[in-house]
Amino acid sequence: MKKLIAFCSLVFTASWASVSLLAQSAPLIKTWEYKEAEMKEDTFAIIKQEQKEYDPTGTVTKYILFIANPILDLVKSLEVESGYDEHGNFEKITKYDEGGEPLLQEKTYFAKNKKSKLRTEIIDFMKDPDDILIRVWKYNEDMQPLSVIHTNKAGKIVGQETWKYNKTGEETKYAKWELDANGKKNTEEKTTAYDKVGNLLQSVHIQKIGKVVMKEQTLFENNRVKEKIRMKNGEIVSSFGGANSKNNNFDPSKAKTLVDFGSDDFVMYDSEDIYDDNGVKIKTIMTEGIDIAMEILYTYDKNDNLISSKTIYFTEGEPNGHEEEIVYEYDEYNNKTREAKIERGVIMQEKTYVFKYFK
Image 1 (cartoon, rainbow, N blue to C red):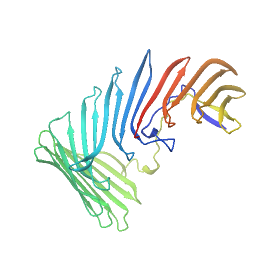
Image 2: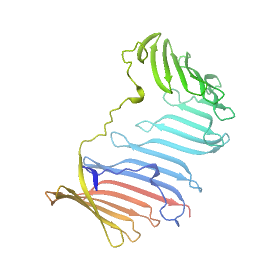
Image 3: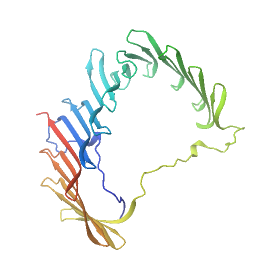
Image 4: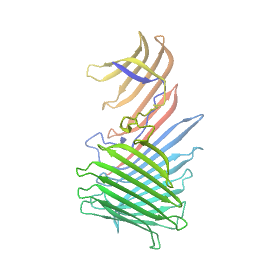
């Protein structure tokens, strides 16, 4: 079997969904903390830390993310909190800069379906940390938004958004206005037209910011873009499609995008897995041609948890002295508490997990 292997050190990552209870008898998690550290030149530094708090139903009620800044100081980057107060169920999201100072905070209240927004309170610490922008939402019977009113802390309306729909529920008009820092009104409007069977015919998007008016008009055919024109203050700045276009053969549905996957250091190896009498994988042999390129040895604890994955590298079929090992540790409930990558006896990367349970 062929496998595509990166000819470089394996990098392991953590994700929000990495926490799971592997043993059915384990109690629910109360708090969880994750730390990720790695060797940076001659310094072994924590570059990421995450914290979660859970309620007795297993729902995350608070999440905090810390990220190391360029001088490797660990500072708060994001905090998400959910709960209930006099306005109802809410989710509060606060974002921070590289120094750990708050940038933006949004506290959103949701309807009973936990999807539709009812009220959002926004604090932009860069503009005015003492002001609160409040957005209040209204919906139709199908829970489609009809309007959002923007007010400041003093109760003055500083913006508004509205929507209109046709009989079949498609959005036909969106309009927005808001006051800038100087009290001048900026506007945005988008109208969409459909034929009798619901196919797109045209959309027009107009934005007015100060004295600049940007307009984008799009024509559709069989729900695909046929022609698009962008204008600035009445003058065409770009276009494609249409009878007079030099790029008349362009079909956006067939456009190609160049994707860069980041590295050319890939080698195709033949791979063979070896199992013991119980069907447990204990070794992987990778060969390039007739020569062994690397061996990966696996060991497990009494609960069948992987506790070591050791890679031995070869040159011309012989071990070249380069070895890497990833070791794992678990708690009494078989939840992983540590993962460390070791090269030549030195810990290069380490992830640790601390669990506290409802008991």
